[in-house]
Length: 413
Image 1 (spheres, rainbow, N blue to C red):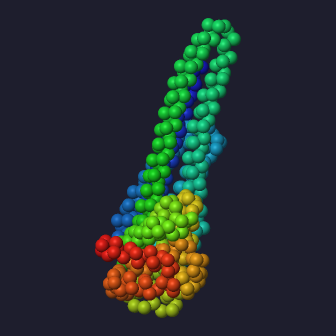
Image 2 (image 1 turned 180 degrees about the vertical axis):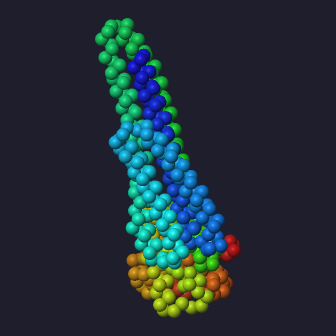
Image 3 (image 1 turned 90 degrees about the horizontal axis):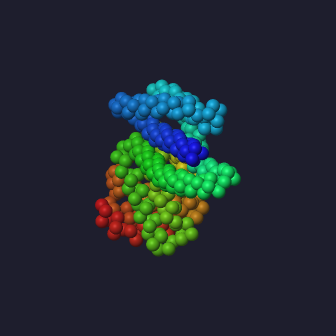
């Protein structure tokens, strides 16, 4: 009886610790996503909006520092020098350095030296965030292993209980009955806890994905707003991309590639297609007239820059296939079917399918939208232009699918 009580107490104690650690990890991860978004908002906001965005950033930073105090209390209860204690300490140290480095970045904003800010971010801030994300992921995996270890502990206690059987037949009967009762209760408790952790893990994953998607959409909106857009461009192009993908699947096109997951990844990644514009100066981005050859050469660098930024921002925290698709879209959505696009001069099927689809959606929406350098084109003229460019600018099969959606797109106007 005593052994079983000890077993139960040990199991419950361990479960409480795992829940506490998991809650701390989830809260830190969510706050860091929000802080990254607030930080970018401050960096690219106008002077008029700077005070409001800075106030939001300060509030988020205070929440992180308060969570780090809770994080520190949890760490004190861990075995000194253990893997978890070391990881917790590394996360604490890296996040504090990350917050301090961002103070430096904010001080550089007024200097108007984007190259220096970019270099400082690449060398200091991005490596720190990658380190934090890796440590947090490792902590989550360790928590999962604790559940598996609990099963082994239960089995070990069950095995040891049989040693008492040699004391006599009555003791054997009592031990068996007690063992069965307690083992049943503990195993039932374990199943309930495992179900709880599985459900919690799935909910946490959904929440993190939702935060990640909202953050990405927010960043994309902010980038678009620098060029006078309302942020609707990224939403409309993402919708058009999704329509083309679903039409392709309906028609049986590219069946080896168009899985439900691929369609989800491409649709979610589409808003990041122009993320590289963050490195382009407002002077070029908002120029009302035609760009000079030199200015256009600078503008074209946003494609390759976008691919690199995507790898830097989400490369360590998102699924590899999703990151690769998002980077391909940013890198190659300005390539042309005839090989005369940029940045790599790819042609035909050398261009990733996700980028070929993005190209049609991006150009169509740009044509029908009003920009600082042009008036909006009518839907009729925009459709006609897309159709004329099949085989030149665009993949003919993608254009064919897009034209089949003409009535549906008209109806959504």
